[in-house]
Length: 296
Image 1 (tube, rainbow, N blue to C red):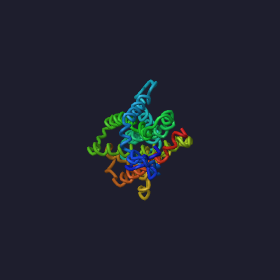
Image 2 (image 1 turned 90 degrees about the horizontal axis):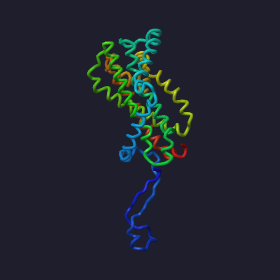
Image 3 (image 1 turned 135 degrees about the horizontal axis):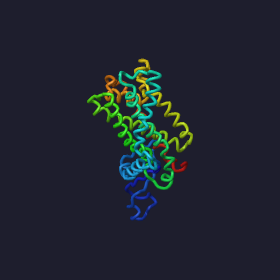
Image 4 (image 1 turned 180 degrees about the horizontal axis):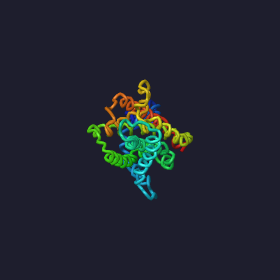
């Protein structure tokens, strides 16, 4: 809401002469802050709506498809086969000492979640315009719902990755039990921040939906999915790590494929960049949400 209402004790003012009016509370209407933060209490109050939207996104994701949730398996597997032929056999790109197919799959599993969730969040406000023009609720639940729903596909794809590792005899590090959930959390924060930016911009400027596929394509090749980060010159590594997906994917490979020790410097820079993206995205979303119903 764009208006803050506060009740103060006391009368209505000097002109109020009635004893009943003097004892009545004062109603003060103030403008909302220019940069509103996250109202966690309000989000919690609407948790039922949030879980409904998450469940709706899970159900409609593969509705009226022949393979259903099987697409969550086929997408990374088919892409891995293409990458293995083009980048592994023809281009002979190094893979940090592990077979290229499992190397590519370890990068594609988190990237597939990231790109799918970002596409869903970026278009979520436009596709839910029938809701935001009729009733009030915290608008943040709309871009957050497809991000959480995508975790189901990530879990399925992760099982496929474990199967590929087993086929190639790759044993993950015990540290993966702790590091992988933290990296997934960092990835969720990153996609939530980017999703809030894109959703808020998309409902105001529909050009965003045409830019988003190109943005994802550039972002994918700017991330170490088909190549290892070790190919990037040492002097550019810190700048390269400002891409939040760099530290996340490299961390995945380090603990799952044992491609080397975790580069905590790279992971730290990427996580901080992801947190900055989350904070700025949520603040921009909250700053502009008052116009969503008008332009939807």
